[in-house]
Length: 252
Image (cartoon, rainbow, N blue to C red; front, side, top):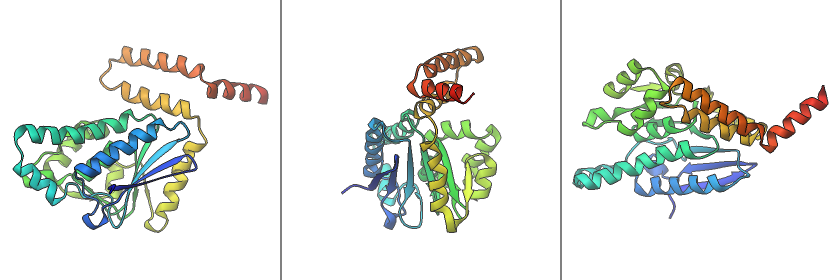
């Protein structure tokens, strides 16, 4: 049985983490199902955005007890393979062509907070809670740190990774980890309204923008500018751009 639920409606693909009795905790099956769903969605040229959310009271509480027991009982090479499995998920989110959006309610802790952080956009309900508590059990929020460090300052990254405290949605927005905070009462509708923007803008332009943004990581200034030149040139040749220019010229 799949650990997720999927649905496509009006060009938006929704992935629901479906382990509510476990607070949608991550395990091998859930991570595997997530990767499969993302890869399948990436092939669908009719989709404009992907939303990841959690069933029940929480978004995702991190690893469950069975996953932690597996870590304790595994060899170095087995733990390496397990860590690489999660790394592949985080990397895949950036490689998927269209925006991947986390809709966070309840708790997003440890690997669950990492999953949200790995998404292109994070939307949160006002009562949502975030945190990287791994250090409390001698663990490290390791793979997600590569993303965390790119989202917030070095000082803030150090604080969040080494103190392990929980923080609310308003604080997450202040830190730069959350794009928007919506009232609990209207969260689902507000998420739908926010995501619907991607139905109205150019799909090809969004795809090129996402690829360019992440491609610039680690590039020198000159190399980043050149990557921008390449993306600009490609965009000019797309059908969306040709139509957009024609429409604009006809108006004037």
